[in-house]
Length: 281
Length: 281
Image 1 (cartoon, chains in turn purple, orange):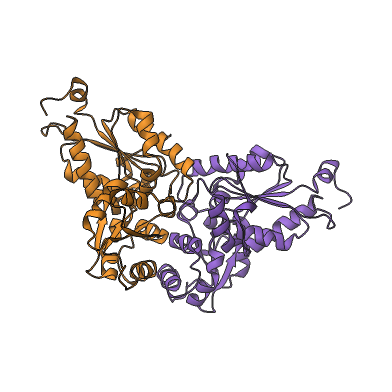
Image 2 (image 1 turned 90 degrees about the vertical axis):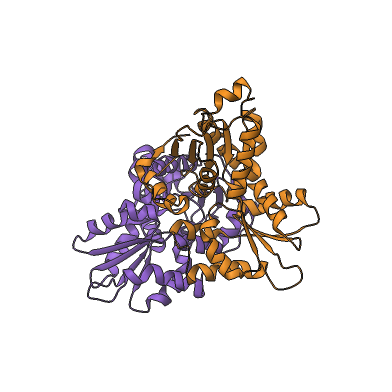
């Protein structure tokens, strides 16, 4: 953008900060890098304190502010909250504390994509316990289209399966069936759209799809979030000139070797512990 | 004991402190209460920061010291570390910091029971990633009998299954088979003893046993730990007079209602959120 303000112009070359409770957010980072190939990223996985999904609202807000502070100290130009749990409870606190930094969560883009996808107005959401109980997806979807029917279920074993790298085969499908059969019981209100409301779940997408059959649209928020970030950078004159060489920094609060090993499942490319810097919040 | 020292005599009525990263240690508390019906207990689950199994040694030591300090402030007369991960890395630090408080871990009693149980000198250990990689069980067993053969495997999905309350049926057995088939491959070195090296695993004991068949002895450390604590109280004149009314306090660092719901699976009795006090470390 040529009409960028001096402040935003100065920031164009800065990285976009991304944080998650662990490695699951690497699915979001992957979508962001694909959509924004000229941008630099710094990703923080709060591996010392994962999972966020079982923790209270207050704890998740506190942890999110600490994660963001670590990234803000690295001069980011925008912040992506690549964690559904944190997106559900911490966005307002983050925007207030770090204004005018643009803060984007994964939850609202996922909700928007689901509302766009459904034809019969019935949407299912699967997520962690914290996300489901907090009701953030339910609220975000209802805000976009209030007459929609929403059913939600926590699927904690999907997180463990994804981290174990067991992403296909009969065990995954049995568990998926147990979780999903009730949500997708035959009948007039059967959902035609499923939101993968946890960043871990996209790696199980094929197994979930095979259990559901072809009549259900599966929405994951990673690519929708990448679109939102793209548009926001453009609108604020923050897009990096495409001739720049993008940088990628990976930070974790604990366990670089585990981060690299498990993170490889989610980022779609092998990682080594040398790629990961351990930081203390 | 009538020959107790004045100091230990003063302490007889005090509670025994027990901590774990979460609710799994309630299996140990259950065994302790059965073995020591006259004793009071205060149990702390560090639910805000679970799991410990994926965290680094330094982090687990730091968290363990904080948990113990919370219990020591409540005038405990002995401390049970009901978490295999913490027992593997933090016992020395705890004993040093809180001397002369007796500190008992679950790992050494489990190792001792396994060595006593094996007939062919081949033992398998299943645990969390942190416990297996730290090698604490392997060392504890080797210290008791150095020529023993030990195979170990992390089984993180067992933790998720136990917390979900899915403790029996084909899904559990399929996962158990996938984890255990390799460890128990037929041959002369096939283990005849399995240590459940994570406090979550006793609730899956029947499913594990049905996959292994009747030729493998399953050892869980809870009851052995209760025996060790019993003997230690006696030896130090710390046993509570049996006419005392035992008290039970349950503390968690986060999520009282989740603690109660999931904890009911492990404690063998229903709990409500009102039973649980949330504390900040």
